Length: 295
Image (cartoon, rainbow, N blue to C red; front, side, top):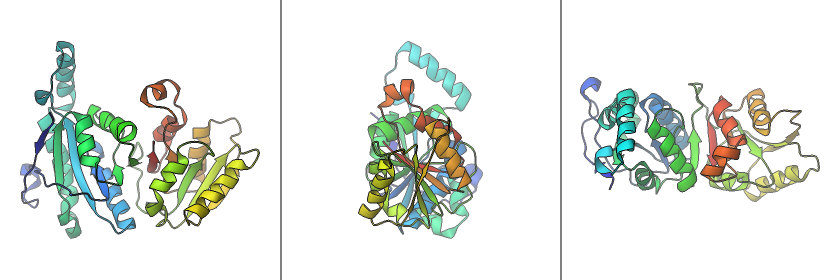
């Protein structure tokens, strides 16, 4: 069973002594999922901008594995002890995220309505519980083991619309200034666009890019999708010129000064993606802007 902690405390106390305790987020449209302290602030900034774009609400939640609540083999226990030595205990990781959250929260008075929830135990169960009512989950695949496990669960098990910060701290705001969409006639891009419609409607500029569309079918389907969703955007067809599809999409987004890149995530399930997945992995590793996707 996962272990939950729920409580309330004054967030304006000294940050060094601040211990984040939790308030249920009650179904906010945007959830900042914070398993790793290093990426916590960036995820919070992205979640705030995503919530503001649709005039919606945001919430924040820490999740982490809690070995004391689970049953492990002796080999797994050895690995957990090695991990705790490298990353700190479950409690220490929670406190680090809490301090990052407290710093972020006190910088603007309007953030006083945002509280940090905490769920520790089985990461997959925590993800399912925390993300259930949210339309968009902001989290990072980079960082500690909890971050990688949480990302995998959000994408492959919960099938949520996900917004991820770039690998390095490139985010400068203006999240939906120019959204570039990697479009393929067949794939998950259509489902991602439908899930992201509220955010795309708030974008100042939208560009759908079709790679190696020799017969024009992808371009026509992209135009039909924009019309179906009542969105204004430009459709562009480019050649890969020997590059991989992922490389072509990322370079186009950089050239066009995209502030967000939207793609359909992973053609296969998790295990097959480990063997065959290329496009999504390349985009997530090399994009210098936030990436929105859905599996």
